[in-house]
Image (cartoon, rainbow, N blue to C red; front, top):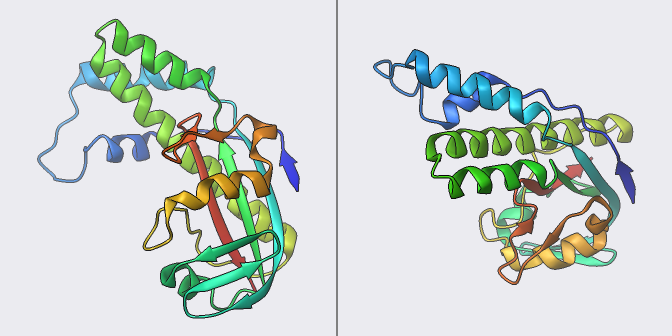
Length: 198
C-alpha cells in the first residue's frame, strides 16, 4: 500500500461550467454575476482542497466471466470482469480532497446561499475527479505498463457494497476516508476505482 500525501489539483473552469450545465447548448449564456460567483468560489476552493491518495497493486489470481479474484478481495460483476479482461495486475486506489470543502458547502446551505453552495459543491466534484485522473496516471507510469480505463464501485453491475472491503484493502482510513452504512464515502468528495495493468 502506498500513500500519496500530496495530489496537485488545479480545478479547470471549463469542467466546472460543463458540470453546471453551461456550454451543453449554444444558447446557454453565462451571466457576468454568475461568472463572478464561480471565480469567487474557485478561489475559495484553492484553500479548501487538500488532495491525497492511497493505492495498492494486486496480482490477478484468477478470472472468469463474472468475477476477478485478487489477494484479499474479489471483484464480482460481468462489467468489471470484461473491463479488466486483459489485466495481469489490478491497482485499487482512493483519492480525496478532504473534508474542508464539504464543510463549507454545508455552511453555505445553512445560510441559504444555495447558488454559492451548488457552485462550490460542483467545484469539489471536479477536483476529486481531477485527483483521480492524476493518481490513475501516476500508477500507470510507475507500473511501466499499459492501463485500462478506471472503473469504480457502483458502475455497471459491480455492486456498491464492495466499498467497505475496498476501503479496508487500500487502507483508505490512513488518508481519512471511510464509508457509511449505505457504502457512500466520507468525505463525499472522494473517488474509489480500479485500473487494470497489462
